[in-house]
Length: 113
Image (cartoon, rainbow, N blue to C red; front, side):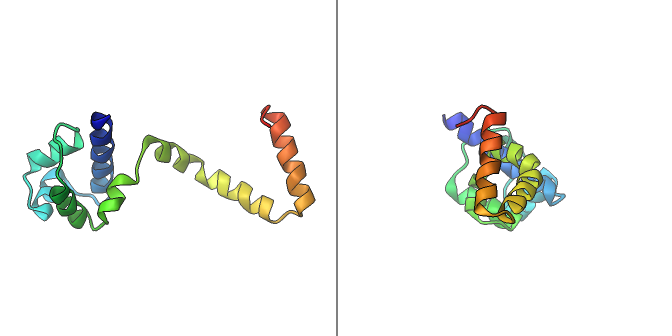
């Protein structure tokens, strides 16, 4: 379990770092940590301390909690978010009886109750 947590946090740090166009060396400088340590954290080879999480989150200009809000599931759902948002907007524009009809159609179509 701890390996999974370290891996998810490492992936999140890597993604945030890349979104900001930073190298591991640059992030290390901003966080006052060695770049090899950053690499070890991103590869889940290092058990990162809370203090170092705070240094990295400051360097990335995010809250520490943002380092914990990422999973593979969120990556998959991000790909669907535009479609889901469009469907939701369509449903919100319908009358309650038409929303029930849409629910029944989807339930029948996908064998869900």
